[in-house]
View 1 (tube, rainbow, N blue to C red):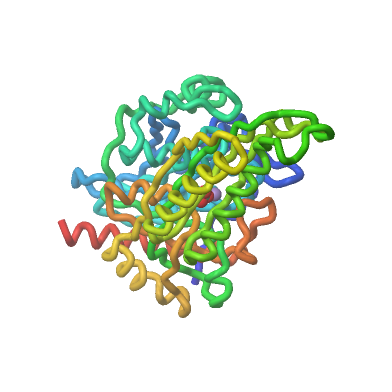
View 2 (cartoon, rainbow, N blue to C red):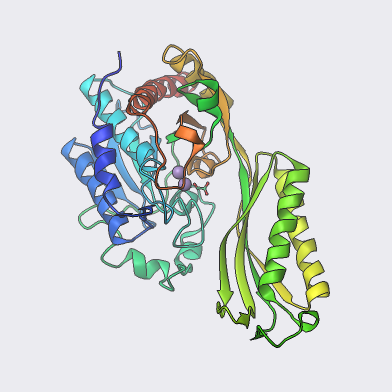
Length: 412
Ligand code: GLV
Ligand code: MN
Ligand code: MN
C-alpha cells in the first residue's frame, strides 16, 4: 500500500510561484524562486528538521541518524525552472525528498547516516549561464570565486543577486565550505518517453548524458536589406543558421547524440536591416563523450567554413563542459532490489537531461529514480505526471534511502 504524503499539495503550491500564461518562470534568485526556497524552508522547519544554506544558495534540511559521525546522504533536486518550465522538473525531487524524510520520521526509522533533503541552487542555467550551479559548487567542480564572477543574462552579477532581497534566505544559518556527502540520491520526472512507452512506472537511471554548452559570437556587417546585393553581404544570421543546420545534420549522422540551438540574439533585429551580429548558444549532449567531442569539432569546422564563405568572424566561448556520468553500480543494484516489488516493469533508463546528481556523482556514489512524463514532455508549461506515479516515486525514494543507508553502513 502506498502511504499518502504532502507531495501533491506542495507541488500545487510551488506551481503558483512564477506561473504565467506560458508555464512557470522561476530563475535563480528571482522573487518567485526565493519564495519557493522559503516554502521549502518553512515546511522543513515545521517538520522539525535543522536548516542550513551555503554561499551559492543550496538549502539543506537535515534529519539526524544514529550518532555515528557519518557524512549525510543528500537527497534532492532543484527549485529553479527554465523560463517556460513546468510544475515537476526539479520541484518534484525537492518536495519528494522532504516528504521522504517526513515518512522516515513518522515510521520512527533510525538511519545510520544523517539524511539531508536539499534544494540545489540554479540547476537550469536559465539566468546565470552555468547549469548545475549549486551542485557544481558543492562538488568542487566550480569554485565559489568563479561563480561569484558570473554575470546573469540580465546583466546582474551573481553576488548582487545572491545578496539582494531575493537571494539567500534570512534567518537560515550559512555554512562555510562544501562538505562531502556519503551518497547522493535524486528523484525526478523522466522528461523523455522511455518509461511511458514501456508501460513502466519507475526507472533506475543508468547514466546521465554529458553535455557541452558553447556561445558563438558571429560578427558580420549590417546594411540595408533592400540595396546590398546578396553576393557582397556578410549576414551574421545566415551564417549562424548554416552552422546550426550543419550541426543538426552531423548529429543525425553520428546517432545517439543531440544538439540544440535554443538561444539566439540577433542585432540589430530589424526587419529591413541585414543582421550585423548574432550571439547564439549550442548545447550538445550524449552519454558517449566522444560523440560530444565530434560535435564540438564540427562546430569549429563550420565556424571556419562560414568565416571563409561568408566573410564573418566567429568567436567560440566554452560555457560549460560536463562529462557523461554513469550512476554507481552498487547503488543501482540496491535500488533495483528495493524497488522491484513496487513496479513489475521497473527498468534501467539513461538520462538525456542534465541533473544535479551528475555533479555530486563525481565526489560520492550516486543514483537516481525516474517516474514517467506524459508524452515525454518537459521544459514546457504542460509537463505532466499522474498523481499516482508521483506518490509511487516518493515511496520508492523512501525505500531507496533505507537501502542505500544500509548498504553504505555494511560496506564501512
Ligand atoms: C536541465 O534540465 C538540462 O538538462 O538542461
Ligand atoms: Mn531538473
Ligand atoms: Mn530542467
